[in-house]
Amino acid sequence: MQKKIDSRSCLSELRREKTGKNQIIMSPERFNQCLRVIRWTPINIASALQCELSWIEALEAGNEEVPAGLATWLETLAQAHEALPPPSTYRGKRSTF
Image (tube, rainbow, N blue to C red):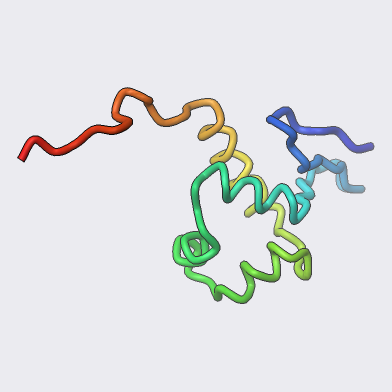
């Protein structure tokens, strides 16, 4: 049984394994969408995870499956960023010096 996770056009899904545990399956499209929402480049996430950029590029392209733990973490960050956008108060703010 598959169930969608609530989020704007979220493409990750929960799958119940034979063990009864839920596993998040993240599509390459949602992986890329999460990075955009968080405002991370592939280099930023590779740096945060201290992994090879080539692995991140493989995740982006769908050549590697996004691990469940990484998918859960990215979903959490993306949902927080969607719920709490940057304040607009500071747009166009300039230094007084």
